[in-house]
Image (cartoon, rainbow over all chains, first blue to last red; front, side, top):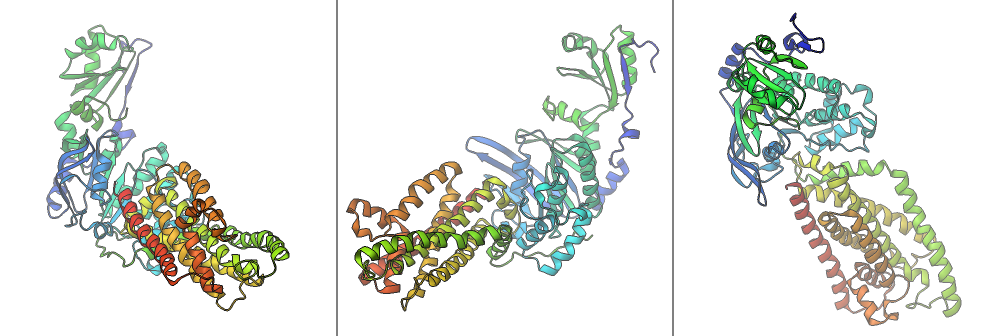
Length: 345
Length: 270
């Protein structure tokens, strides 16, 4: 700890690695992933555009998703993530561009494609009057699955979603996290080739989110192809092999979380707060101390290879931030760099 | 858990799976549906059929209206009216529910189901409820002695047919509606109410001024009642009019379903 701290100054060294273990693969693991999954693209999109009247929701994007890959769209609300998802899921018609899902065009063979997908929508649309089991059952029936198959599957899914004790409970009475898990279980009833999740943990409390992440991570380990949207950078880091950063209908960057951080941010970040009136005032001073800074209304971010050293420099220069936080670079910083805005407003 | 390598196909005639789910949903309110289905005709028959009927036969004799007893006269009308009412309830509420209240149609549409199969399933479920309702109603009519003419059973298929015709149109109307509050105000006050009053349910439509009769001509209930009376006790109408009544109802059924299928698909694919 720094000996010359003012008493009001709190220095926090957040050891992200130790306290919040993330599932970020190492560099070698990424290389391995790349070489093994080059084979098959389940989704191929080029020049995809969707307009609602004059409003361009998706503006000519290209991407592809490989088999067994976990692919994420990271971006703020209104970036065009959900619209893209709905086009992939064959429930919305595109304005122009080419889309191929499992080798088929969703505009022509919608039901055939949907027969192979599991979809978790942003808003739960469970039948609230029916029980947990009944919801799973009727959903399986929509796929035309036989009674015997669904009944066996339900047992598996109740265990997976940790809802065994709630099997005969009306969905109406479940908590938000349970409803979300049931929606995911429901999407798996047909053993889909691709699982599409639109903001799977938005609106859930931290504990419910962690349970959900654990369940999704298990699916990922089983080799299912995951396609998800999120505006939480920690969610994207935990679950995605590869990411697309989206803003205002366009792709800002694409790559593994690690690649993106390396390319668009520094190794570490120091966050300092001098009080809302003084942040802007001191920004030019801070700029002299590191490669790059971002000035936010409530704090200044200093991008550097050694955050603690940067803090030492600040104190040596005679400035005393009210609080400071040294941390590793995250996808939030990538997004800030690319768009000049925060992910969650 | 194996999650890869499924060989799923699109099920044929998907509407039957939507029907299955809708029936499960209805069974949750099974007792309510049964109570309404039995009480509604009982109350009607006791108050209007027996009460008003005895007043009529007291004043103009037992064969006072159209040459038959008042109960025989209103039986096909009550049956058709109840069919229309239950078909409407079972298409309108599920449509608002599915698109707006709990959005379950969007869940269904994420499977191989399409807008048409979902609309079809909702319609079929409404028909199951209608057939059940007409069955119970006619049994009660029988107990009241209102089904005693030789062809009175013909009122049953005619009532079901008119329920289907009106149900199809209301399925489309509900799908086109964005604001359900306005819908209920308009349909309840300006369609169902007047339709019941001006379609010749309780007295021949010809007793009214021609201007008011126009309401009846538009109403599917009037066409259905005319057909029902013709079939059950030989109410005198020309063969041309029989064809007109039948065609009118058939057109409602066909166009109602076509528009409903189209609008369901559009709303789901926005």
